[in-house]
Length: 66
Image (cartoon, rainbow, N blue to C red):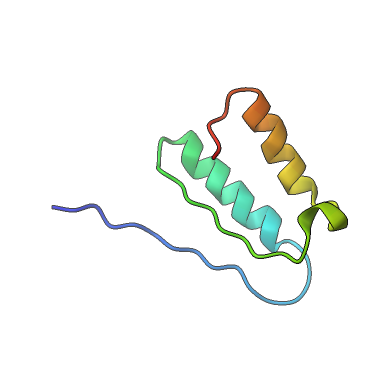
């Protein structure tokens, strides 16, 4: 039997959506799940999203990111 996946979508005004989504992705990956992460931003570097900086640091320490 094929395993079922889970899709989570975070939308709306205000803050916290990116942080919540990245936190869930990191948590699931830590438990051994396969994780895909897609985000749509105008320009993450221009806005200085700290979540992405954290992911870059994790990648540098060996956390597998593509």
